[in-house]
Image: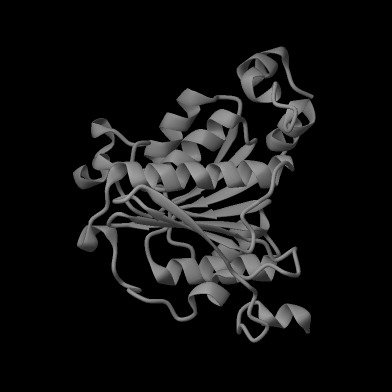
Amino acid sequence: MLSDQELLRYSRQVLLSQIDIEGQLRLKQSKALIVGLGGLGSPVALYLAAAGVGELHLADFDTVDLTNLQRQVIHDSASVGMTKVDSAMQRLQAINPEITLVAHRQALDDTSLAAAVAAVDLVLDCSDNFATREAVNAACVAGSKPLVSGAAIRLEGQLSVFDPRRDYSPCYHCLYGEGSEAELTCSEAGVIGPLVGLVGSLQALEAMKLLAGFGEPLVGRLLLIDALGTRIRELRVKRDPACPVCGKRDG
């Protein structure tokens, strides 16, 4: 059950009929894996911790650099040189000591990634490279776990939800295939801070909807965000029955 302290802490979202106490309990009992604690992972981790998601698994093998601080708001100047996982854990514990944090400080290979995905209810891909996104997607399809995927570069952002539990849902590979600009990262192309904050916040919202069981998740839809013109478009995305990653679900 929820303690009096928890009821007070989460009172503003418990007031929402779509969440209520039952939804808050589901959040408390949920486990989520956040892959990447940079520009996207920062707002994701902050909002999910503040919302009371009971167990957050944090995966990042990088350390905090001064160039990160323009957009990776979970870290601060005192965190420079620390592992991003330790920096994030310090901040999240300060925000909400009621939750449990699980650290993954090493790069996840196929075996450890599969185990990390199996240990949670939902995965949020906040990485910045195509290879990681493909690996996370494959692990989520294999483990039948929903994946909230976000990306941002330059002045453009994208967001979608892939849920292999739903027959109609595409996977990341259905949408992107072999990818484009696979090796292009923010350090090479640049990115504006509020954009990753926007995409990450929407990722956190989609995760809460899936975990608490309310609203319409962004499954089969892709949001395209144009920060320069302040425009958001939505595209319908269909599952590819011939997809080499998720097509075998029919077999």
